[in-house]
Length: 280
Ligand SMILES: C[S@@+](CC[C@H](N)C(=O)[O-])C[C@H]1O[C@@H](n2cnc3c(N)ncnc32)[C@H](O)[C@@H]1O
Image (cartoon, rainbow, N blue to C red; front, side, top):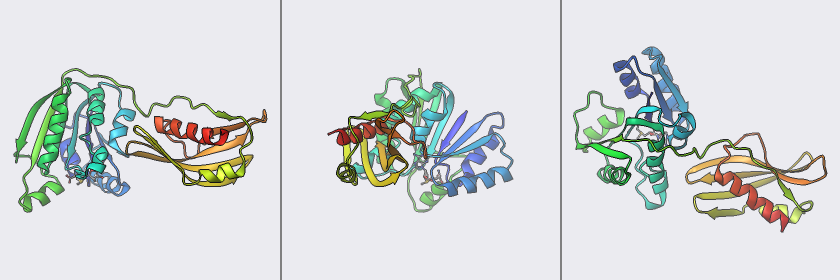
């Protein structure tokens, strides 16, 4: 299986799949518009071995693929996020390198093409520092058989292109941060009072990679719903915490199923923070 992250309009992905009809491909993109455009192109060009999925590849790679299962992961012209405060969004982060070390096959390839020299160098350093990877290529202005839309644009503007190819020597499986493990319901010592509930609105907490925020409070059957956001690094999920009285007359704080979030560390962190505030 080969994967392109951030395929844009899907032109390269379709060309790549056309070169290797015996292989299976997956494209991962964030905006739904890109998926619609690429799906139309792939259908027109009859690339039946390609699947598209919408979401953030830094998390989906782990959630969708078994350890040691990918032959090649390609990313071309990702947003470089140049400001330090946005560094966590970069695919060059050490967490992403660890994800690749988990999901690539032995001898599997990660390939990055970018117009930003500092970004290519930063990625280069992260992979060099990881003992499971070996750098195969780091080149400027490579000859490429197919140029992406952004590549054509940057070349017309006279920019240089950088290509980094690294190979995984031995996989290092790590557990997915999106693994679905059961969430417990947290018990409150008494019925929460309305002042304590209202005081939660707008509260934020942060610890390590986890951030949590309470947006709104609603009255709901048998209790309340809190609309909340839990973020593991840049992976933010909006969902509801339900505060309700159980059949056994106990007050509980539980994650509501609509919409059901991935049960990440930040989701657990948020649930514990809310329960602690309401227990004080
Ligand atoms: C500058 S565009 C390049 C598009 C195409 N690769 C090209 O070269 O023409 C970068 C694309 O990467 C996508 N992208 C950035 N970060 C992503 C992530 N974490 N997961 C999936 N897609 C991502 C963006 O949505 C955007 O469409």
